[in-house]
Length: 165
Image (cartoon, rainbow, N blue to C red; front, side, top):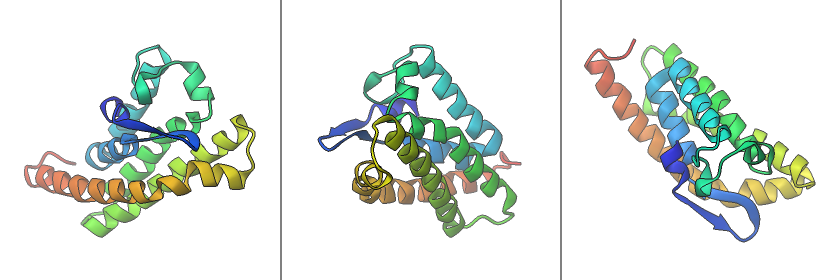
């Protein structure tokens, strides 16, 4: 997630950058499952909190977590847990199942992110949605599709090698 956070570009209309963070969150959840996927995201937030430049644009610190984009970061462990638990509970996970789980995960990310953006930036919910969700949806759909395909394939290979529970 720290590496994917650095694949980032700012947009002129919102403080929320476009990154590959959610791609990494979803890959960790699908591949590692609920416990380790969630733990990987908690560690990511902890590293940023301690001052390591792991957030988008090499940012770090409590100010990022409490700032306009912090809600997206706080959502990562929750999304990873929900996606991971969904992947673990399904006996025969299909690509479509993974895609559905990732849609749930991205919904969590955008809900928490939008709420904190509205609160911290003193925006109406409509303006927060317009600035923190709508412009990012096309790119997010590509990330979800890529994570669903790659996550499914990696899980399939690991299951075949009997490396998954």
